[in-house]
Image (tube, rainbow, N blue to C red; front, side, top):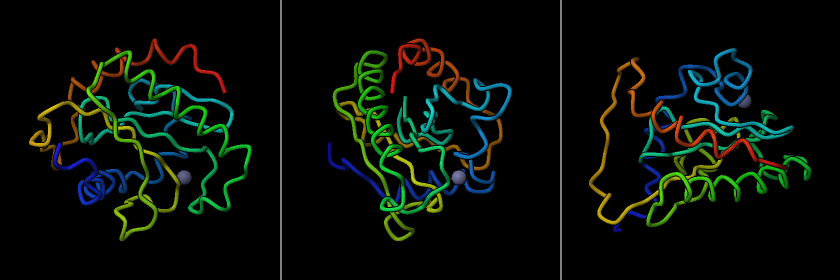
Length: 163
Ligand SMILES: [Zn+2]
């Protein structure tokens, strides 16, 4: 576990998402939520899979409100996001039994945020010896099947999500 948190990697991951507009504002409104990789949502929060994962089961959790400032996020939404975060950590434990989990956020471009306009948290499951796991997805537009496999594995656990 040499690289517990790799913000440069997160920048790359977020970079890949940027050209689709604000995914945190649009994806949960799509008709096909599986294709959109939206696992769950509550009144103020959306839980998605990262299309450009750092590791298997990499989740993104965001308030639905398009907000860049943590201080400007209404308390009600902040509390709900945090409630969803801790439940999502449990879901990842149940679904993947990782050795550990990185949970965090990148605030601002120089901290590695690609979508700095919309607050979001990363949940990255970790396994011993996974530091060399660097999936090269590049420019491909085909959604790798393993993402949908992971989606199907995670999604039933989110049916009990409460906020
Ligand atoms: Zn947004």
